[in-house]
Image (cartoon, rainbow, N blue to C red):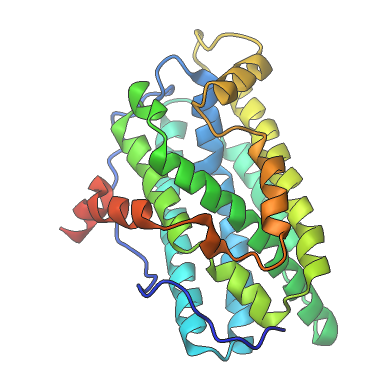
Length: 291
């Protein structure tokens, strides 16, 4: 367990009220990019199930965190994840209303997350060890969501492709908050446990687990897509979208491993969060929520 005081950027993490209007969003909201659309769908239909489990683990860890600043950040993180779940649920209902049958996949992922990443009713030492294991795994996952979040904020190809503005705002708002709270789960893990071997082992699980989740879930959504003009050979569409930078490069799940496992690494080393803070101040949905 680390005994150093929690330090990070001075601003406080808090949940923001947001208002999205998905009524005009079409099935393929990135025109001409069917598979890229469904990879984005994975981000806001499937990943929130993991975020729910992450928030649960952090809530369990709160009694073990005696650093007041870190406690505040953890509580703010939990609030943000709850808002993510609510906002993505609205997008999910819209996509279901226009014909994309996502419920079986989302329900299956939710069941798996509960069975695999729940607390399992453990007590004593076993409960603590399992909590440390989950925190380490989630810290590894959060590294990738922060990297992808920064990509979403700086990539201009989605705008060039005329992605529907409501969906672009949704994923950029979410990505910005992932960058904003990128250090919280990592710091919670380091505070509660901090073991390097556990961090290394779970980071590999996080990397290849997320990669598999994106590919399998994206392929499933492609097959469920009812549009007749969706094209064929979704794996080739996936590789093409990744190579052209319409979606994050899948090599990221390999190339980021050495950086995350470098001794002395901290998520704040990913770079300044200016892009995230700037976007959160101008996001149409966030401004609508404030109004």
